[in-house]
Length: 232
Image (cartoon, rainbow, N blue to C red; front, side, top):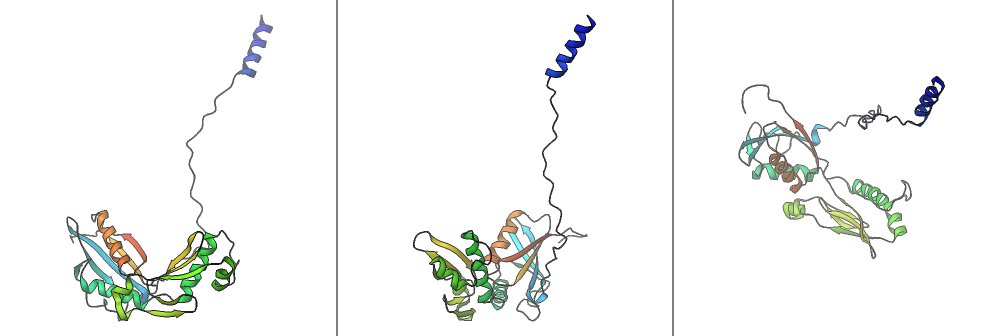
């Protein structure tokens, strides 16, 4: 009997499947790159504003820091103004236009976008001209809204491929088969940092960013401020 019991025990040990418990699948974030450097924006290209909420769907801006010598350095310092205030809007447009990126920078970004769109490795083409010829593309300029906003004061430069390119225009590369292949907007180097208090709702953030986009600002940053005392 002992032999039979021993054989049965071996049989069940061999044939029984034990379920292995599994933990929750969780992907840990990558280790920060030690070579990553903090981006420092020069004060001449930096505008800092605090966005406040006064009531239902009513938002105002307070200029904390503006580029030295610019239209917003003192005009609105310490004053809460509407996001659609004419002086605020025109000042932001002027700052953005004065800091329009060079055509060389816009062309470089366009070449990068083209390589990505065509799934080509970096360095496949030595210049935008060579890439356009090699891929049989047509360069075009799509006028931007800043032309009507700024009129004759807008920054315009001549380019051998695209002709006259203004701040806010879109450089487009297209072909006869697929249409638009790659594009890039001639941006401003102005960086606007928006500071919000926790009691400012999401619509305030959307309206502030939309106002900046409509006036030529595409480089923005957002921070959430904690109140240190009192009321605003």
